[in-house]
Length: 135
Image 1: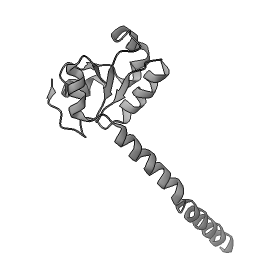
Image 2: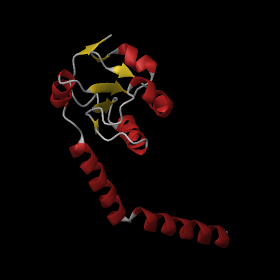
Image 3: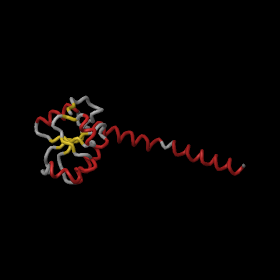
Image 4: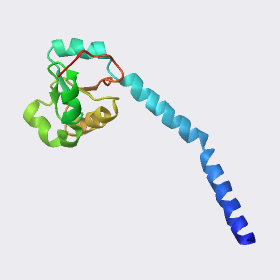
């Protein structure tokens, strides 16, 4: 019984110490805040699209079919590395990626940069900006 109490107390103290790691949490919050502020605003997406930017919805096909930005093409995050060159062969073309909350589009943004695309922007998601969506 004494051994069980000792193990329980040690576990609780250990867990408590981990949860008090406030500086790491603040760094994560700041990093996320920075990402949010780096997102292209919805109205800018539409302006850039009118100027010829390729807008890519990186959500799965089912989500795209439920409603997407007019004239946006669907290249899901899971296939963007293999499908992008067929849709956008020029590495310097203006590309704007978006999804629901900018999570998948952030990943797509990084993948496109690694593939050598030089003019890529990550936009506010459809849950962050009220786009006029079409089906």
